[in-house]
Length: 508
Image 1 (cartoon, rainbow, N blue to C red):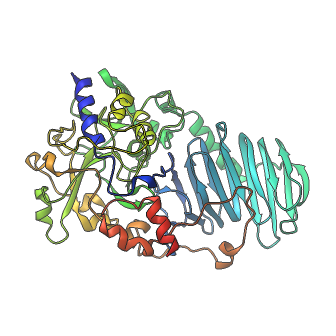
Image 2: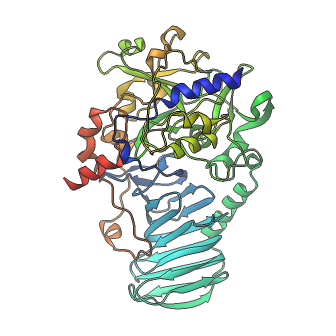
């Protein structure tokens, strides 16, 4: 019976897959995002599309064109799939490209330690500096030091292999060696043995060892970002049809997607940033179930090599049929609750059929998704919606006590802490007519910057980010500035622009 309910559920929700955007403009977002995993000292980020810097926040998802700066005596750690990027003090890094196949990093200054546990076939990691572009050829451990005063880049390969490229012949650097490049982009270099570890390297190795021995990877895919944090903050149990689930150690009354804030991260749109140190993986992968009176996180299939990241796996409640909105006065309100076991996630952004399937089957157990999806797509690659009736949908978590969180729309727009302004939502207010696949809230500048948007943040010296770097892989176009698209975003609140609209804005 439950499988039949899931099948009907998916049939109904698939009809919402297509938005009013031009369907020919599909360009799926990447299936992964970078997590800002660790911060020590003053660490700042500059989201792509804005000129302002803001204090970094743990669990903030980062993506293409985002910049990170570690100030004096600061350190930061970023995670992406099976890779960890660790920055020492006074380091400037740009995520030039984060796609399914390419990770391209611009390192303007400072020290970066890169640990790659696994390199997939066809996957490229490239580190671009003012002196060279280094391509990772094997999984391993690498260190990059960029000294702007001496105009040098040192690349140490502790384990692995890679190739540096520039205006001269390529230079392969093998395990146990270090090459120091001088003279601008001329590829002049000196080869030597890799140096011994310093304090920063020792810290990186301790972090690697902690991750490599995380027990939680017995139950989740190795590419679930943030799963290494789960061991310390909860326990694994086996529960009936769900199989292994993780139960967080939390106070009574806690609920998923309640303690944190919302930010606007393109190309996904509204994105949850959880307050808990363990909050990244359970917010962006898997599903939440309420069983035996407690919340448990049910991950997707462990056999999935690369689960697809989602900005927030929730069902939205809002619009004119959401009575709670009236209690918030001007601006209205919006609510949400976690999707349950086997319930499909319908993106608010334009996606292909393949993406829709992958973001669901890699994160929960949905039966017959291929057959069901085929009922909604015709063979000429156009999309046909044959049923948009969602009046009889019932979510597993919609009436669970405390599951629904509702806030004034300004709480989302201003990236404010949700728990401070959340109100209780009576079960009678959760009606199918109020369900929506997107939060009907238009973003503002503060939404893009996130928490502490108006606080003073450490900023790198202007000359640091102005230095050109060498690229082997052509970088993607820079995003359209947020202010140039803000008015268009307001016309369809809560839904990011499709690539066709972005292209038109870029021309104007």
